[in-house]
Amino acid sequence: MQRFQHYIDGAFEDGSATFESLDPANGKPWALIPRGQADDVDRAVKAAGRALWSPEWRDMTATMRGKLLYRLADLVAENAQHLAELETRDTGKIIRETSAQIAYVAEYYRYYAGLADKIEGAHLPIDKPDMEVWLRREPVGVVAAVVPWNSQLFLSAVKIGPALAAGCTLVVKASEDGPAPMLALAKLIDEAGFPAGVVNILTGFGDECGAHLSSHPGVDHIAFTGGPQTARHIIRNSAENLASTSLELGGKSPFIVFEDADLESAANAQVAGIFAATGQSCVAGSRLLVHASVKDRFLTLLKGKAARIVIGDPQDKATEVGPLCTTRQREHIDQLVGDSIAAGAELVCGGKVPEGEGYYYPPTILDCSDVLAPSWENEFFGPVLSVRSFETEEQAVELANGTPYGLAAGVFTTNLTRAHRMIRRIRAGVVWVNTYRAVSPIAPFGGFGLSGQGREGGLEAALDYTKVKTVWLRTSDDPIPDPFVMR
Ligand code: NAD
Image: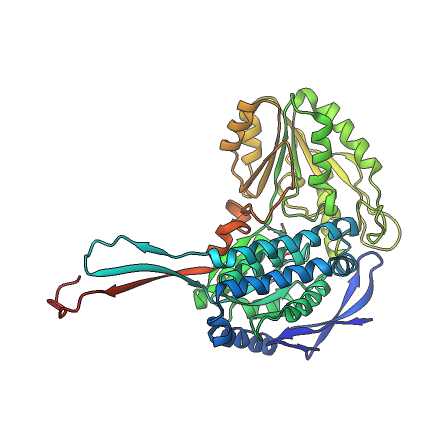
């Protein structure tokens, strides 16, 4: 069994309690992980608070912070394969995807390295002749970053990168599921040379480690990615301290195929949108809206592609769909599929837990035309696609927006004017036209409605980790006039 350690105040520790992490490909324990307790959280937050005000970090130039981030980016790139293997082992996410994704995670750190000394304040043309007034962008403070189990290295990079660029310090809480790669990342952060306490990485359970961290009085901002239910806890927890929050939550994203779309290309994008990452993706295009005139043709194409998907060992490069991360997740998916079929949804393919070890679930398609199936409304976070057809553009928009979520949407059409109309009318933080599941450090990402608040990626994310300080400097040597009149 491999043993992993917490990273608190620049030191690696075993933790007073531990738990076993299971390999989703066979359900067997393979790693011993520290189970963060209130005391660990207290020490980590205290270290982050101390580091924030230490001359070593506070007085470091933004350019130097950028250099440390460049070093971290290089280390992530050099160790991408090792990190990918760990993530695959601990979460079941296929090696093809983790290898590519973690190599790209380095680009996120690089982007924020370059941005560190470009986060500018402003000078104001103030309406008083004897005053100079300017705005300083200062770090928001100690950031608690709480991430879910899918793509932890990626979802933490979009928090750690901009927060460090802005001069914040962090306590990162990895998910209790698949946490090993985050503790390997801690080694690289240490090697990059960040001062002790600037980044602390803890692992532990949500209701103990996570709850204590998000309600900690030493935390100024909580950057959370996870489900809406947990987000409500986070907001309640933050209330005591009035910490600000940024929330990246779930989705039930529409994937809209018009009759004039390139169906072959759209079908490939739909496979990427729902079966890649075994559907465990916040942007999963889990609701297919297809024009009635091409529905049968499109479903036949999709069914053929689903049948050819290689399901197997996530460490095998040929595998396209691996196991789900946890048995709990598989039970949730199987239950929702069963409930949806009971409600009248028609099973097009998949829908049955396979024999054998590991938390596998097959690519599944449910035709939900004319029925209100739970699969149409609820996030699965698994490889399950629900399908409905539409006749008009208005109907497509109504169905697409008929969800409290609003994370992403895909529109497939060759009609340019229609594409523009759809972009304007869809309620989602990201709209992809004739493509799906594309991301970049340069492009902000986030949701509307139950999909969250705030944006990750791009300059906007870095600004979210700053607060504006307004400075007034009087340039006159004359005595201050009437003290009873506000200037
Ligand atoms: P989750 O909400 O159960 O857990 C997320 C994190 O919160 C974990 O680290 C967990 O330990 C912690 N947590 C749980 N309870 C807590 C509490 N009371 N206080 C503080 N922390 C607590 O989510 P999950 O099941 O791990 O991940 C799946 C969800 O994440 C899905 O809804 C998915 O759509 C969403 N997600 C969103 C994005 C995005 O960028 N929008 C990306 C990936 C995943």
